[in-house]
Length: 139
Image (cartoon, rainbow, N blue to C red):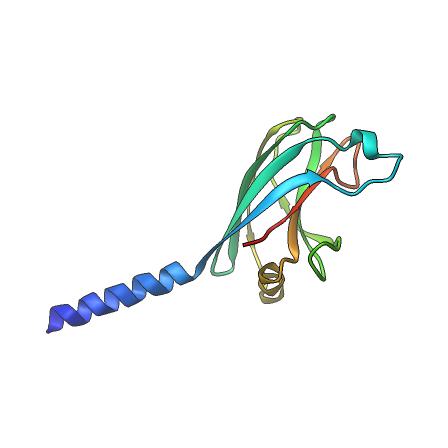
């Protein structure tokens, strides 16, 4: 009987652990542009984000930019599809292709925003300092 209790406890603990891990994906594509910047907005990429508790780990890659990356940020917006403020820096090489990575401790409002599609990855380059690629983190 004692063994059954431990087995049930172990199954419950594993089930709770599995429930706290959430996976989000993003397809990175050129941001909306005006005629002045449209020619410099090229490339594509993908990102995966895993939320465990309040820690969000982002990995991904990009390729096809016309000029090297200057910064990569995680942004939070008031709603999906609306640009927002950067909340964390991610890591990427100063190149036209490469990996993206980073870990961020999110606040409760930022986690809520993630759950509602309000967080996105944005890549900035030399020719597109306002952003060249972006992708919303969605389940």
